[in-house]
Length: 35
Image 1 (cartoon, one colour):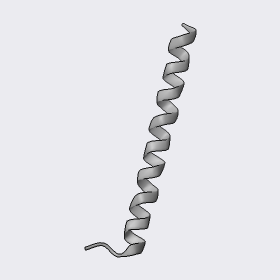
Image 2 (tube, one colour; image 1 turned 135 degrees about the vertical axis):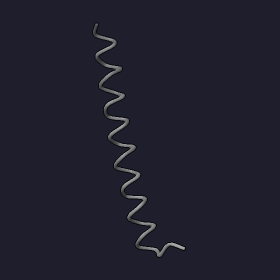
Image 3 (cartoon, one colour; image 1 turned 90 degrees about the vertical axis):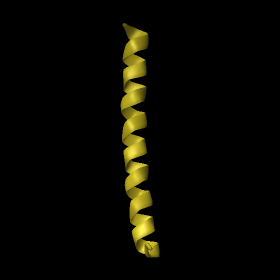
């Protein structure tokens, strides 16, 4: 069982991962459009 702070930390880390993934995906999409 996770404590609230552990859950919060996991959520934060997941959010960072998602943001990074979205950012790189967006970058790839943009470069695809320009090529």
